[in-house]
Length: 282
Image (cartoon, rainbow, N blue to C red; front, side, top):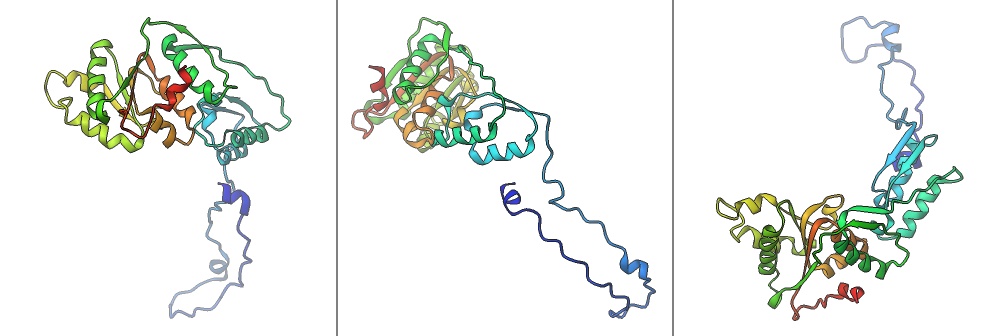
């Protein structure tokens, strides 16, 4: 789409004079009309895209500058509804994304509305997540969580760097505390390790923990975007920050996935990680 916009349609090649004589040995009559008749062809650049009267963009904080330009070509004369939270952006350069959006708006009239209430996250969970993101992005405009469970997030440290065992214990305990879904969110570099720990732990197969297995989902931070779980186990938060393009903003997304309980697990003291993310908690 971008290349078609930059390069434009291919040059028009003038038709050659039709050959009215048979040169391939055929013994059939070919009329002048046959030679002049053109086979209709579809011009891929004739209509590059459809345009729309209204465009709705959700999760706008993750739209890339090139994607904004693509959308603009489809709604140059449209009205727009754009919904997003810059504090949750996974795009590395938030300023670049903001400039691309401003270029799209141009001089058009704009009305802004603030979503001030958080119904999903319990206040105990959201207060922790808010401290984390504000520590890195003081200008974050955060809503107010209006629900309370009375249960504070549980911040754990794995003994001897055994994240697999610590994660299994946390998941098993969480299974007794919530009746619904459980999400285990870990950095991509530890996904295979944690998956192997959960798979070989008895959480698979027909046994007393099979019901818990049915409620369990293992995802990476970016895969967790837009999702929610009753209970969440966040593995190695510092690694999530280091391995995510949005850094602390992606950790903020991860910490706000639970609707009831949050558990975090940091590697043990011998790890090179030192729970740097906790410093913003005071």
